[in-house]
Length: 237
Image 1 (tube, rainbow, N blue to C red):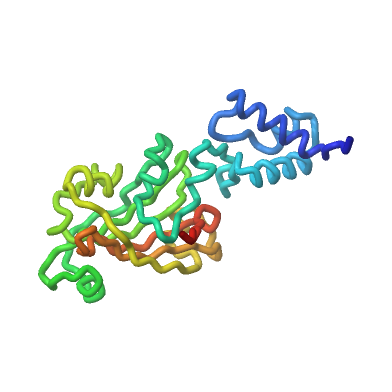
Image 2: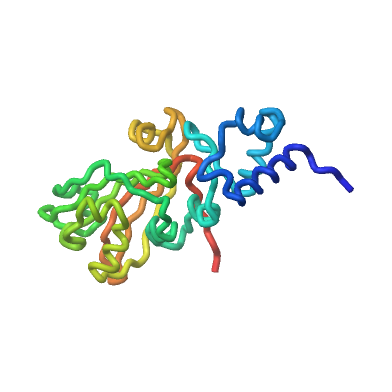
């Protein structure tokens, strides 16, 4: 019988300890893991790479190695290019998902926003910037514009939860399709501050105009994802 490499054996031990709840949310530092499993740091690094490949853990720069829940393993990074649901709904209301409202203002729309959201120049819009966090680790930064008239009474309390839930369950509006553009960019000052990125880290951005089922546009937004926390799939049906 072919003998498994040592890093695989160690990875299996770490995985078993995760299943037995020896570790909660995050693995210890590499040095501590090497002592615990009586091996070298190089072997631990290879073991962690193997566990990352199996979608059991996810290294986050500056925060260590996070343990993924079953939902997060499949959902946290993935998005569907043709499916349009809110981030909270995609995470299935995970107790580990939180929203930090960076800024929230009401103002007149720009020329671009007037065109995209079919507004007149006197109508007001919400100007919202939020960061979304999993296990208190920043994974995405959202810049959102919404018409006040169409989506009334939005508050910071709503923004800390799910604005899409508020739209569908409190306003009784039905969310429809979205026109989406995907692009790569470099990290700007806000990305570095709120996504824990370095200056030249790549950023995955989704720009979209979202519509209600009656055809009215209700959101213009850009979502900035950490390079290691954004992924889009396109499923042909």
